[in-house]
Image (cartoon, rainbow, N blue to C red; front, side, top):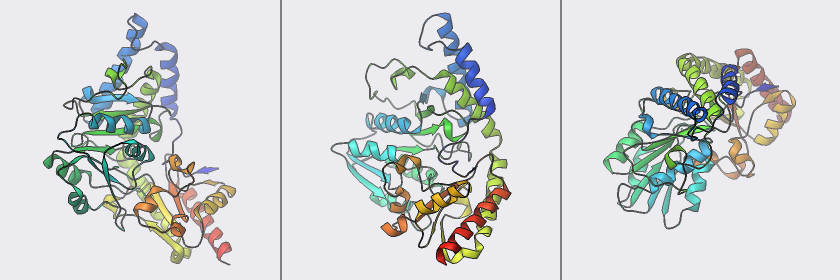
Amino acid sequence: MIYFDFAATTPLDPEAAEVFVQASTEYFGNSSSLHDIGGQSQDLLENCREELANLLGINKKGLYFTSGGSEGNFLALEALLSAPKKSGKHIIAGVAEHSSIHGVLNRLEGYKITFLPFNSFGLIDVVEMQRAITPETVLVTVQHVNSEIGTIQHIEEIARICMEQNIHFHSDFVQSFGKIDVRNLTQLVSSFTFSGHKIYGPKGVGGVYVNPAISWRPFFPGGSHEKGFRFGTVNVPGIAAMTTAAQKINDELEQNYDNYRELREAFMESLEPIKEFVRIHQAGSVSQLPSIIGMRISGIEGQWMMLECNRYGFAISTGSACQIGMQSPAKVTQALGLNPHEAKEFIRISFGATTNREDVIRLGETIVDIVNKFKS
């Protein structure tokens, strides 16, 4: 089976795995314990916090470790709403935000939520976002890189507007951290999240940055871990392994980006025989992560295409794995304004460390073969 679903999760890097085992056996103490064994674990934890803060270009005082992106999004939004810059009950969010963001917004009472769609290039119109702002707007949340089509939102512009209007701005960096350099953005937002298993670290670990100048209140009062940001014993081995993976992938950013761009071009060329049936949802190269391809093939349901590819030995997806269990179309299809029939055609292909040109071309040729057989 050849894997093309790296946007969903990545395999654990061997070096990160070694660090995980070593930390689990040698630094097993609870980092909150006062004895020496707990102190050793605490020292390792703080070393990881400092290293990740340096990689991200942030103040380590604002970095908190979580169980992953979903918990991070939940806690970040709740933290910002606990300390708004001004009074108001209006929030602006993208239609295509991760399900964890929608989960928070759906549970809020007394707030008015404005959801912003994508334009035809898979981007939020910043002018339309600015028009949606009211005197009551206290929070904007926009995902940096969309997990289903890979478009890169104009975070700098959105952040500037939010600062001018005295509005908190949260951004989900789960799909961008480790893929593109985010250091020029991290201090422009009120908060952001990232996850270990998207960058060849372990599952069940991630992080949140909240600007240390924000006097947030904990959603779960009485928590003693991570300065009260969350409950639960801190996963020090997971954090150490994630830090190792982050260091490694950060050193390879430019090389990986160029490689994925070449693989994307090769895949597009392989689809040339069926180009009349193919619709790729993408932005221009500056606003497009090359490793994620969101597409439709006219007249063929995405789930059927995914199963056929699986039968031929290729693992692709029909969108975010966090959405699949809900048996509803990928949120990006709603953001793009696709009708229900078009939404069902959506598939996602994503590249990673083990993807090579030969496999990409083989996948493209297989899809061409499947489409030709179906159409005939």
